[in-house]
Amino acid sequence: MSQSRSAPTLKFFKSCSLCRANWADRTCFLADASVTLKGYQAHPTEPEKGLLVFQHDATGCGTSLAMPVSLFSDLYQGPRIRTLAYGSDDCEKRCLSNDDLEPCKANCSAAYVRELLRTIRSRQTA
Image (cartoon, rainbow, N blue to C red; front, side, top):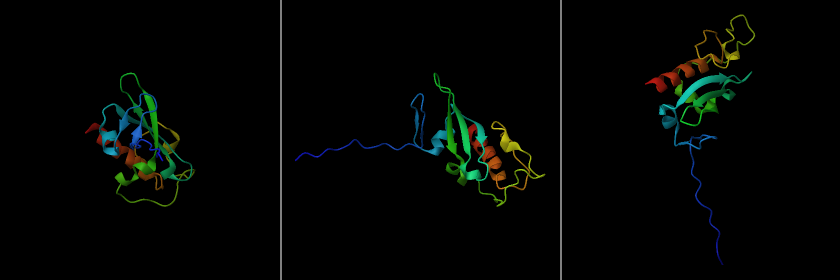
């Protein structure tokens, strides 16, 4: 009796949907000079479900790669606020602009994502 064996499945942190480049882990992904953080697509009520948008600028590529904040949230070790300030007078509305990567001073549960963006950008320029 013959047994059917499938080829082992390789696991990657991320694969580019256009050029098929693969990154073994998050460290390799963030260290790749052809990958640049471009934006943050906020989730209206749960910051962890927002998306970080990266541009893959390898020769012949240029595609956008979106990944949930949750894949990077452990890079932020500071305090987290439980309440969302969106719609309040304190809200700076930075999350409404996908390409705004600057920190937010609002007392908001999404503010840590703004600090996370800064952390990722600093790792990419190091």
